[in-house]
Amino acid sequence: MNKVILTVLLIVFSFKVLASDPNVEQARESLDTIKELTPWSWEEPITPIFDSYLAADFDQYQGRYKSLYMVEDLLMHKWGQSITEFIVLAELLYTFQPEDYQQENLPAFEAAIHELDEFRLAINEFLLPYVPSYSLKQQSLVRHFDGEGIVIAVFDLFDPIRLKEQREMYPNIEAEVQFGDPITFLHGNTVIDIILDIAPKATIVPVSTESKTYNEAMEYMRAREDISVINMSRAFHITDDQLDQEFADHLSSILQTKIFTKSIGNTGTDLDGVNTDVRERLDLPPLGSFFTYDLELIKSFLVRNEGQPGDKNLMFAINLQPFSNEVSLTATVPGYNQLASDRSFAIAGDAVYSASSNNFESGSSFSAPQLAAVSVLLLDAAERYGFSGSEATQRVVQALQSTARHSHLGANNTGLGFVDAQRAWHKVKGKGRYKPHPRTAEK
Image 1 (cartoon, one colour):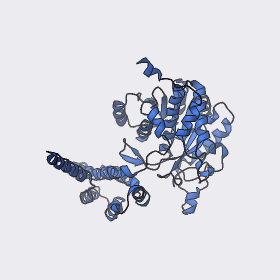
Image 2 (cartoon, one colour; image 1 turned 135 degrees about the vertical axis):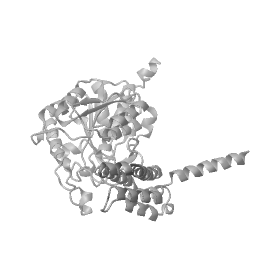
Image 3 (cartoon, helix red, strand yellow; image 1 turned 90 degrees about the vertical axis):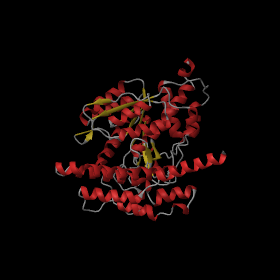
Image 4 (cartoon, one colour; image 1 turned 180 degrees about the vertical axis):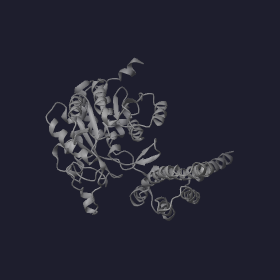
């Protein structure tokens, strides 16, 4: 009997391995079909991925060394995004073909797209166990707290179809609050994924806006007294090439009572526009990011708001490479701006897996929600130890900033350093006395 069971298990296990094994030959045939039908006559980024995968020797390493090989040497976490970008462009090019041509070849084209995307999913599934998880010293904190009762606004852009799916899985995600006619973008959905990975019972308020209704969104978040944390992975609001004054007024008011986490940027420079140390060492030119204007807006707000109530409640996230051993090549860093450095944390956001995109995402946009989620858990802890309102907010911010682990990369690159959620938790609770969660007590 045991032999029969063992045989069945081996068959099932073998099938699962084969089913998820990236099929390069089939994917290459699909790529050729797509290139023929689009038509695509120039160099594409997918063939080098196939070649790298076939040439890789995954069995030469074990444990951490295998992770380093797959992530740092092969850069496999970037493959999925490259395939996705290729597919999006190929689908766009296909729509430029004559209508009758599209109709005639649609089954073959869609089948090829599907097979190439299956290869992407298989690669990401294969890689997932070897990519470092969140490095926030949060393990003990997440065992005791889940963010229940804490409300966090995600100020971003969303894909409504994916948001509907997320809300079906998580009843603690509210309906999207829209201002104007914002574009559809999966970015905010990934931010929600990250927050709920760390603080699964936090109440999420998705807030989206177009540029001309930015201040309406800010006013809404300012007025909602139940919102304790706001995560912003967007640029500050600009008017006539300067920081919008109404936006700045709203933000100053928000900081008096709420925690505001923001991605510091992805320009490859410091706040003064000087190339980062890592790019200089590698002799890389500036990125020329479209969002370089945000650097001046950040500096302007910091000077304007210095010394105001709650000014430290604004916290920035600097993007690190996956193993937190170096600043990301695209990261914005504080440089020698003390106001920015004193409220910035270095967090690995260069290979964060998203259930929304089924890809590994990169950027400070995905570092900031990690900081926001830890803030939510610490506010949950503060509430359990008898603190509330502005006192709880102040304790959490001071705890995070005073317990950050300094980095050998220097404050100009990593600000205060690495988040240490464990030490911050002990700092938050102090001599407070633990109380059951109000919702738990009611039950």
